[in-house]
Length: 261
Length: 277
Image 1: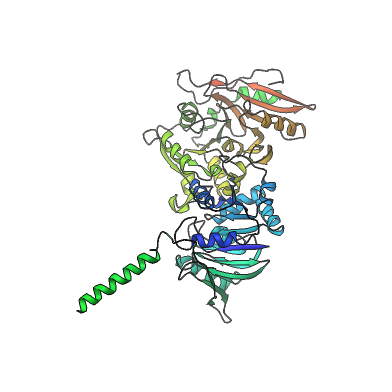
Image 2: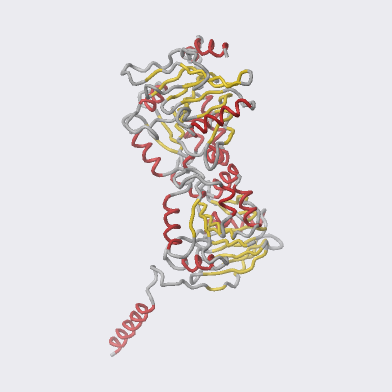
């Protein structure tokens, strides 16, 4: 019963994203895992589906996506399809819309069933918060608490330091009404086994995970958790590779030496 | 049934608009396409032009609701192409990208002359609407005289119940219930959906109306006022179960492509045909 909740993740070669993808694939034993994307929160955008398929297409797995709005990808028997997956990956977007649509199709019950029968549930942003009792959503424009499915106890907020409004909303909500939880940065994540936190992970320098609780006497406490550091399988496109970095250091040192001379 | 047909024959619709005292009571109007309009009939603007003219305004305000498709960008773009600014004042409401959408959905929707609902999944459509309270606003807009229309999922949503085909076999789905009938779409073109509908009617589903691709049912209040079509062979149907048998009555359907000025409402006539369609 595994859930991997990511504070921000995209199917691109920018820093940390491939490391998290490979960490996710490492959670299942199958040599060629079956992985299905649920892009519901985005309204099943073609962009999200295309990026997922491109990234997953470069590793050994069986890829599918399940649309709840359009049948461009063909019709599927929902229950059989979801229950035979090794991993279900839930993309980002509107958490409120996603949960409403899932309930309209009975997907919420199927995901709970899949989780109990061994499918790893994974997702980022809305697709991470949805597993908890509460998340901090921007579905209506402003950041505010919204109920999730409650497979995991407590609350989760995402893009923790990139979106200060969300962080503020989490701290305030935890100090007043919602249960304690976590704030997670982009390219960081939390692995849960059953209802227990098993491992916080980070795939980018500076990407962290915070435990947020209400303080006795009012207010909140925000405590950074130690994370396991994950590395990208190849150099990311938004960072220079090691050789270029070394060359730049050398050139900088030489020009410094020239100036001193 | 006989009573219904009598009512259909008598319904002219126009008399409700103004009372002798000068107080204008809003006319509640819904037009449901069995399929068609810009979504399905590129190059054939007849149904879209019909709903624009129903508003009675030369430059009506039209808001597109694309939630059944997940607010698909490519669909929204096609709406703006089909409803250009020189014919109307087009807008759309996105519930997935709220920041790029009108700030106050209620005010925006109540300001419209026409609300046009696109196709896709009716379950997803109603789920998203309820999450944002749009279902209540649409009810309010209907009562305040905004013309409501849509195709496929955008047709089913207005009825008490209907037949949806999405992943897997056809399913019985509940709509918003503004119209106290059942509904099915793509009637002649989707055999499986039609058979499922007939089965549910025999099991006690309330009687209702069906429409072919290219046919549109125009309701005033709860009652069907007329059936119009963008294709010569498209029809609307009254479908009900009587003594255990499904009876399908093909309704007189006015083809909109004869070049004549479109009257706002002409009394519908009915013709009886054998039960088998």
